[in-house]
Length: 566
Image (cartoon, rainbow, N blue to C red; front, top):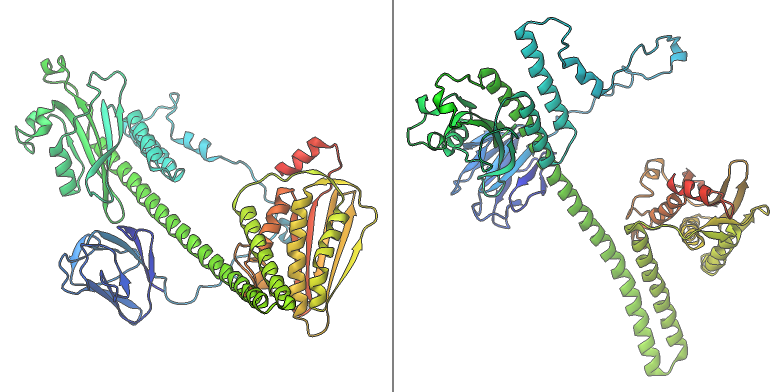
């Protein structure tokens, strides 16, 4: 399904998906895609499909429609195109038509023994070690051209590594400027990025060579910046006073700049900024007319290549940030929607119970009052459970470790749910291992974890056509230093495709009856103990949940710490 992802503008981070029917874009709410941008017309543009081909056409908008920086009346869209309407910039993506090719029969991973493979690793090189390949050894004679080529290649390799190892734009730009000054004999430098909102160049990094006889404040020539931004070309000037491109009154001449290189940071779709370096004219240099030039065309080409790598990284980082923001907003929206629905159901129950209490009081009927209070009390327990689950899942906590008997904790949970199980005609049987000693764990946390899973098991057993059965057992394995609590039911089981999503927050198989937090909370509690939850389920035959955690004896403080860190 094709989509538009907003990468700049008031709707940044929003993703709009659409099908084969024509869809309009504009400021008015009647559009299929509403853009909150005052520079967008009420009905600005339209996207329509012809087979698998999608085309965008301008609807006589006031400010026009642009694709990849060019004004269009109608344009056939390709995945990766950038669409700009008003101040809003969107990325068009479309998956390739046709099913994915299954290569499982073409590529196989097997052990060496299966095919008698006796090959072995001769030598391994880390990424850091591989960069030494580009270093020039003084013992090996090399031509000037080869030495220069390897030096340039080394710089590009290190620049590529810097680009691939960070998602922080400021850190990336500082590293890029540091690399440039290692290889280019410049006095001053600056990287400027185009502001997403202002569309003006904004300085992000300033660099000054320590021995440079230049003022600390860099005065960058507007003449050079305008030329690079308008032409999209990198420029080098060896002497501003003798360069015909610059007017004698231009800022580059007035600033006393002897040599300068300025290159555009051209990304995939847009110019994201410029990199500027220069050498300043010192008083003694003015007396030497034939001073050696520090910059040449090789430096310019190298700077253009580095600027392009940096621009791609800046674009990727901005797109990534926008996607993270969109996912964060989507997660918040899903959380609010789920909790609102569940809280609404609880409030309806409390409202119903309150109505019965009010009616019983007015009629002096104690039975009606007691019935209403039972409903209110049950829903109060639900809201309390929901709040505790939210607190547990939303923050990091250290378990309150203390000596306790796990069989006693499990028995307390069973006692707590017996009445509810009896009402639902579900039989609960217990088989607790008699050899379980006093162990160190968080009794309250484990009580909550067992309660959540046992409650789920009762709800699942109710769906059996015959009488529901739930069994809870404990097994102590001293040789493995583990304790296991198993809870099994004879419910309908869990489809294999759903087991992977069981422990995700807000994923519930109870439809409107559950919040989807119980299993996530239980797993978090077990993880805090250094344990795990194992699931074994067969559709139509039931499920078994095994809560496994380290068996830590009282007084073994170091062992407890090691389990916690695990």
